[in-house]
Length: 232
Image (cartoon, rainbow, N blue to C red; front, side, top):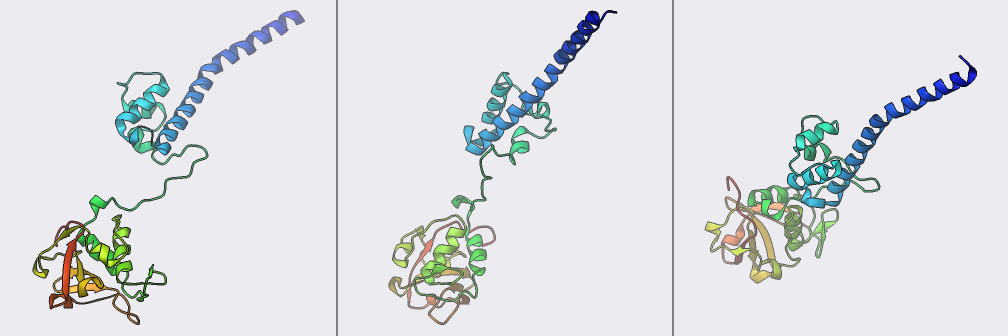
């Protein structure tokens, strides 16, 4: 075999190798691009994050039809048998930060949850005008913080808080988590049930559980901000 023939044969082999490796490289590139597109869709909220919209996004990226099965797409991406939505939830698009945890939706909060959250602040000192658990809270700062922790926004001061939610006729009908307003709107506490309440009382004292003296002559109103909850 002449030198010219040998060189020609080598060039032919190199060309063949190049052609054989193209499909694998293209498939790998396509899968990578698809994962990136899916991650971007989730990170930016495209399609509201639901399975149907996510399926459309994946099938569009694959050049398929809207009827393509999500599990098949996940398998094509090497994601196993779980759905694409579950498998890709942890991904974020390049240059974006992971989504931080959020408070529970207001509709998920109950009086039972209010009581549990309020008890976490036992021992925090009373500070007039305070809203920060690290330094102290006043009565309405405390109640506002408890509901905010549960994803429920209520106003800052008692005079506004006492107009929120729905009225409760008497302490006998009150449920854990209800707001007890006393002294014509000068003070507010959270009812715990069984004749007990929790509040940020006065300067020099800390948030504490005590007997609900509001059952006597100074109870102004009772407001239910969230449903009572199971077992209440």
